[in-house]
Length: 402
Image 1 (cartoon, rainbow, N blue to C red):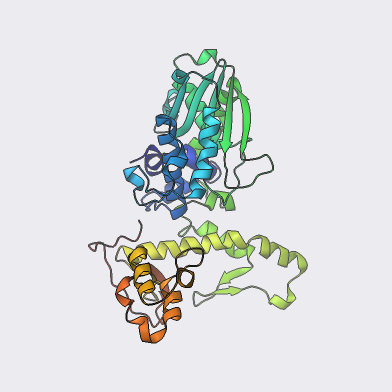
Image 2 (image 1 turned 90 degrees about the horizontal axis):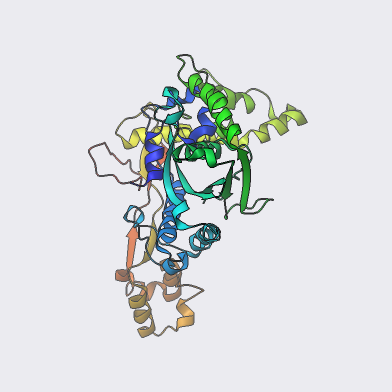
């Protein structure tokens, strides 16, 4: 298991989740025991990190892996495409541009804050890249995501990494400044894909021993408050069960729960003031995150063989897809049927549906053996849905999270 995955799995007060637990201390206790399921986007990001690590350590170029399956066994099902190659190349080229002896460079290093005292026990993270450039400590972090713009100034995750990196040095007293850098090629930013922020050593130590320490203390209190916000709730495992988020989201959307459990509007839509309309529109993504959290909670419970919806929802097969078993063999068969390459190719090989339209009903059976059908992933649906219920429990081999 990669260090990044290990950090997400085990560091309750890790660097990558500072934006959550430093602003919502109650989320730590609320998240305990809940499954931490990696999203497809997070999985792809981890695969990109791994490719960057492999190239930096081997001297290879990401381009050399274009079109191949990922060399890391943890991501063997990921095909490396142009998008990943282009993004990771920016990261790799940036790191290689540092004119620093190899002995002062470290890739994917776990850093710990435990030297700060007993209060920091179990606090660690994984820095993508660390290096010493005379009296400056460089701490760089690659961000593969294209959905959320990462700011570098005052970024608590980067400050956590920077402080941890400083504490790993055998001679931290020689460092005068620490520079944190974000490399985010896939999300446009006014400052470009690579942006940095510099801290004095004393400023980092002061932040750690005051702001960070107080935030840790707040999470340990039995009445630690739940403070929902769009940023804090984004990746919180407890958002589907959080009553504070439910109250806040429904209030912002001017909704409430009726006696029958249905969410109802508190105001006639035709009587909304411009300010109310604007406020509801601003809260749209926030409310959607709460709804997504509830759906994720219900989905995971059904996957594990438990129903928390009162029998009103079930797992059904999602929309499936079809592809050719072997494009070369299919191409040969269609040419033998009298079709030209221009008939069966667009910019890429035509799909089964497109070719079936091309050949018509009379010749459809001649290519049916060339098509393989794949069942869609399970999805939530109302109990009134006409699709057949999928009965699954924890004992089943139900690999829907891969």
